[in-house]
Image (cartoon, rainbow, N blue to C red; front, side, top):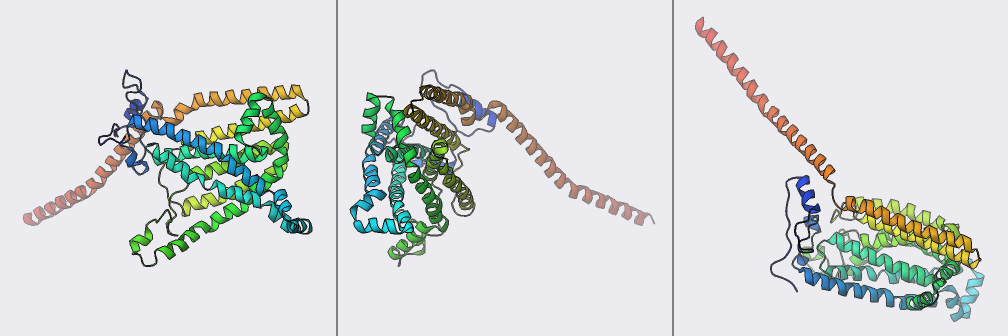
Length: 427
């Protein structure tokens, strides 16, 4: 499915106006015959995917979506199994000694409660590289778009398998069967299960704030990679030591920032904070600490550690915004479930109406701002062209003045010398 001659081309325009008109115009009367979009940066392009034809890309996309659905669906099995086996009650029941230590020592009890979140965090780290490779294999042309697609998939996995499955302690298929049989059960399950899991999510977010961000601050994984590389490349050349080996980088080569993984994990904390803001406000304290520490650490790492491999022009923000609204809808569903359990039907109907209003707000916002955020408006492009032309004209005038000064001085000096010589001859 790979052509020796590609069906893609990169066209460089001289003005922003010409580029904007070319992107927003319809170039063919046959639908889908010619698609024009803003080209990524040269460093952002995956050149091996340029030669993937449109039909092959479509087929690969279907296969990739099927693989992601299978992974998200059946990954609930190990997540639910680990969640049940590593819970505090399950660990205590396996050993009478652990039960005695749990009752005798509060510190040991807290450490035992952190086993389940740590196991869930570890199992989460296996999926981002898989989603990245699936997106690359689909034939996507830019690395930024690959990361955006992996971000969407990893976020959906976390919400379904970590947030909902952990809270309900079941599987996706069982949950879907119950909802199909009784749609109102979806609200009841959320309203009954999520508030009881507030202590688990407090532990999860606290662990991510101190342990997860702490490991990132000291770059523990980079230190481990360097130690492994030192054992594997002890007698290698300097060039070999600097290059990545089986995805292991040198400690002075941090590589690119994993937006797809970090953004998805941070958005899970946002969803947790939005959902529990009403039903269990105590969860907001560790969530606020996580946001504060994340702000400090990621700002430092962006400035001094990680390399910038692409500039997407803010294309991640629309996806982040949609996840904010998604978390808000999950929170409204949870509150609706609590109203149903308390037999407050009128309040539940009002909250359901609020859910529809939130969804229509999302639709109207996307209809209004999606197009202007993805392409440059013609008005702005014209202003930018005028500004660029004025700057170039001012630059040319400045260069002309700087070249003109020595000539005038030379001419004045020559004229004065000639005048003096004439006076000398006359005398």
